[in-house]
Image 1 (tube, rainbow, N blue to C red):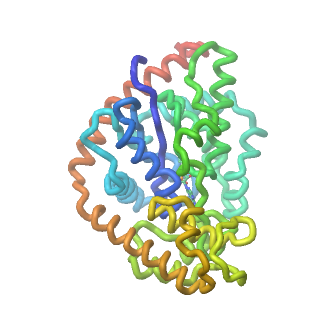
Image 2: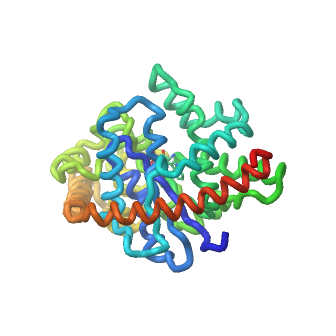
Length: 341
Ligand code: TYM
């Protein structure tokens, strides 16, 4: 494949996206697309097959897929760039086919150790085989395009490491089949401050912000009304130390708010801390964060309202044709190596 190196990421369409998804994966990806698309191929896709690993409202899935795509564009993804590709995983059958093959080279114990699986399995009574082998499909998503860099939040690090392991395992057995993504530490360096982020739930700052949280109180969705989001920030859990300090160990709630404030203002959490030097009242501090969050959402939502759906449909069609070609080439290589062709 004589093509540019690939930067790739996916965001599930189960629910509305929240600011953890936005700052952890979407924004770094879109920034890459804007600054690096002349050197790299940028793949931003909707892993719609991943959406059905747990029970969902299936009647909403189509709409949610389209909403995610619109969110990509509202974040600033340039659709008119021929090195930028958006696509739906289920439209490229090589994802499912390669998953099956990789499944057959993956250990049961290996998958059982995936922490995200362990967490989710404890949350629900029905655990599907799809949820269990979901990291294998994620590996297929990445390896089909030979992606070098994969901007994801910290919760996906273990899956990324698995992707490297399975690629190396196949390469050791069958020769040079897959391009192995860069080691996670190198990825962090490449994406600088935005990579490996873990925004916490506002109400429960010991847990990551997640769309599958028990309550929405601590989750700021990109489509929350600015007022509702303000309310969530104002009632965020803090502590009784009364100092605005970035200390994730002893002040997880305050540190998380500093992180969010900094991300919106384009500052590090440490720089954000300096904005509140000497502040001993959490009320004022929270108000400042709430105002930033509200104006960020207002701005984002007005961009979202302007997104042109037809432009997305046209781009999808072009990207999916091109990605089918690229993915099929990798799949064929694997099929030949293991004797299926
Ligand atoms: P998903 O859909 O759960 O989340 C999308 C992205 O958002 C990041 N993220 C966070 N980052 C910081 N703080 C948080 N609180 C937070 N919550 C979520 C996630 O790390 C992720 O990067 N398995 C993936 C989707 C996927 C994928 C792929 C990603 C499927 N195939 C191939 C990359 C490459 C997932 O469930 O992400």
